[in-house]
Structure formats: C-alpha cells, structure tokens
Image (cartoon, one colour):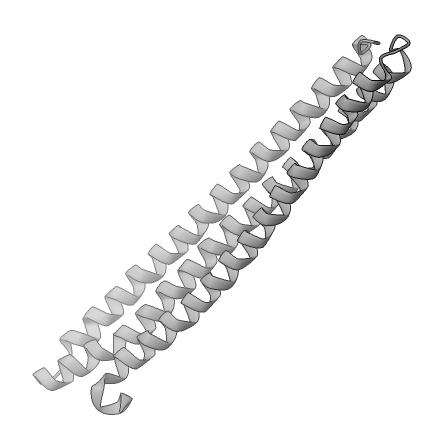
Length: 186
C-alpha cells in the first residue's frame, strides 16, 4: 500500500481549508442577510407604528378607533408571514449550499477511499483476493446505505418545504378571515 506523497497531503489539506473558508463565508453571508432583513423589518415596523399611532390618535370616536385597529391587523399578519417566508428563504438557501458542499466532500472522500482500495488490491499479497473482495463489498454497501439515507433526507426536506408553504397559505387565509370579522366572513 502506498502512502500519500507530501504534495498529495498538502493538496488535500489545502482543499479542506478552502472548503472550510468557503462554508464560513456562506454562513457569514447568511447571517448578514438575516441581519439586513431584521434591520429593514424593524425600520418598517417603527415607521408603521408611528403612522398607526398618529392615525389612531386622530380618531373622532371609539368606533373609529376600533375600526382603525381592525384595519391594521391584516397588513400586520401579512407582513409577519412575509418575514417568515424571507427568513425561511435565507436559511433554506444557506442549508442548500452547505448540503452541496458536504455532498462534494463526501464524493471526494468516496473517490479517495476507492482509489486507496484499488491501490491496496493491486499490491495485496497472493491469496488475499477474498479479503479484498469482502472489503470492497463492505465499502460498496456503505456507499449504498449513504445514498439511501441521502435520498430520504432530500425527500424529507422537500416534504418540509411543501408543508411550510401549505401552512403559510393557511395562516394567510386565516389572518384574512380574522380581520374581516365574523359578519363579513359569513
């Protein structure tokens, strides 16, 4: 069996560091996007709160006051849902990039293991063919198991995304019905 050369070892280490720094940058980009979203949301909430307070204070009677309050509920619910969708999109995008990077690393490792096995098989002593075949079979089974788990994880993520969209639609519909009031909903 041949050990990696210093150049191969250095290249592997360099690739690992590049992957680490790439993922760190992606995580930082996601954090920046979330911070920007939160700042914009806070800025809009303050401006809308000020406008809401001024309009509410200008109400001439209690009925007008309560009518204004009811009128602000629907836009607030829609904005909360939009905020949730934006957070989900940012987190989902980051998760997708991390998954792709992990998949790439796993494929590289699988290739390296396969190369190591092939190299070991070439240099194996006579009579060890059965052991080499068993080892190759075990590696193939492990890769098959990983592929099955990976496929199931992707299906679960797709189902979660579909459920998130359904919940968002239902929440939006419920918020719209709640702000219309019992008389208008009927």
